[in-house]
Structures are given as structure tokens and as C-alpha cells.
Image 1 (tube, rainbow, N blue to C red):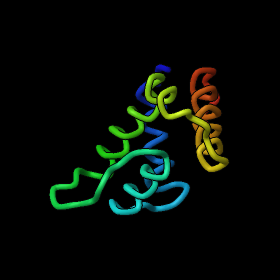
Image 2: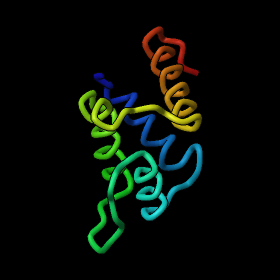
Image 3: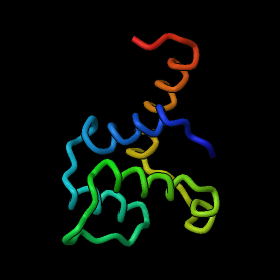
Length: 95
């Protein structure tokens, strides 16, 4: 799956702040619920960098296949919002 930069930016905003403000430890918990094995410790990167890195890994087809990807309702709702924003952007209907 290829995601353009605008879509990735929107995903970061949704995950980091728009659906719920997530601090570094909350982001680690969020991605660990999706099957990652991250930990929060000294030297943790910016929330934006961390989210983009983990989300890029999460949407990778091989990663999805190896982890039997089956999104929960929350993940599906975030993905739906991003899809709607991407389509609106493509057809020039962003408000």
C-alpha cells in the first residue's frame, strides 16, 4: 500500500492529537496494542517521528500478512477518516 505524504500527515495528526492527545508513553501503548513491541525510554524521538515510523511499518503488506492484520473498530474509523480526506483532496473538495 502506498500512502502519499498528505495522507501520512493526516494519519499522524489523527493518531497523535485529533482523536485523542497521545503523549510518548500513550503512543507506545497505542502501537503495542497493534502488535508492536516498543518501549518508552530516554532518547524517545518526537511524537511525529515515532508515529510515522511505526505507522509506515504497520501498513507494510508483509507486516500485515505476518501479523494476521485485522483492524479493530478504532483503527478502521481512523482509516476511514483518512480515506475520506484523501478522496476530498484528490477531487479538490477539501474544506
